[in-house]
Length: 565
Image (cartoon, rainbow, N blue to C red; front, top):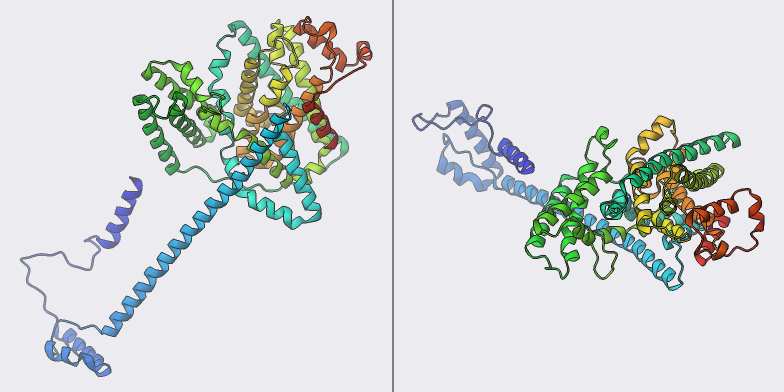
């Protein structure tokens, strides 16, 4: 409507001029026509004579109209030239339009090809790791492989590394633009994960999450700054990172239209696409995207306490609640349609989470762009990540015991600062762990970090992108990384490094005594397992009794990564 109003105003201004400023007098039927003065008539006559002398074709016009005629004939050659200029102008405009359209199509094709290659790589790695029965996240392996390839090319054929970076740039900007959206599905279905937890235990877990997040962030950030001062490394500016384009009103209205049409269709025909999950997929996906676009456009002061990720999750939950009420199926079944975890019957959350592997692969390119800073500050990066990981694991176990949290719940919240894929692998080492609670705790930790990380970093005085990136990813993993990098893309490479190394090092710490199960393992209570594992890893005489340690394939990969990096 705004565009049409502006267009009408422009056309009204130029095609229908205001009477107050127009040179054409207002038409009055009772008014006698004005006569042209003799001076003007003589001037017109002389002009006509001059024209006819130059071009004999106009002589007959002078005879017809006479010297005192009020009609001024126009030279046909002049008219023809004006038409020719007009035709050329229209041709140039159409040429520019076709050129712009061709450029848009080529850019879109470039995006599709580059993003498709990253998605194909992620899918190939997943299939290979599943076939080899390796539980280690394949995307982390791919990230380090891409980073290694880029480093090798940069040292041997720099032009090839630059060309590779330029080729994948559209895909990287696309992923960066929508990055927080890919971490939202676990947050949307959070009500399903926490519905069976007692209120008292829930408050204790919330205390561990919030307090532990703040403590882990502080340890990682202050350790990075302290190590930098110890090794006397001077901080240099980070390489500028391209920022994605902001969202437009056209995108918002387009997704709103998709939501309305698909919502009404799903309500009238619940299985029009074969299954309930497929039928609900379009409007649930649209509601998630609308929430993110709307949240991204909120004022900065509002986003400090109401992050777009929260707005995104609330929007999807409200849409699910509305559909559940209207269809009389309830909220929980619709949330089940949102994230089915079945490739044959995917929901909106499954589509979004399908990009997570590609997100991790894209981190390799960001790390490569900041390779000079990574190499220069390697000591503080690795030291802060290792200390923060050790602190997060053992402080969580200790606080859980001190506040009287049930041992099974303490085990479940242990890897709160580690990405979901590796966190689930870690809790599988322990008896009695609740994997659903683990996923929920990891998501809530990321949510807390995403919502308050920038304000907290400013309050603690962390100014440089290295300290900010390491502190964010070490305490709030993927969600925190997505939230910070959306506003500070120069911190993304250091978030990516801390994000990967925290998960890898945490897996190695928890898997070291995996081959040693005292009393057969199954009969040992979870709290005793935690205590014995802590005795193994901390300086204690009992650690000398351990003589054999076995590692599974995925944790051998973790150890290799740590040794290589």
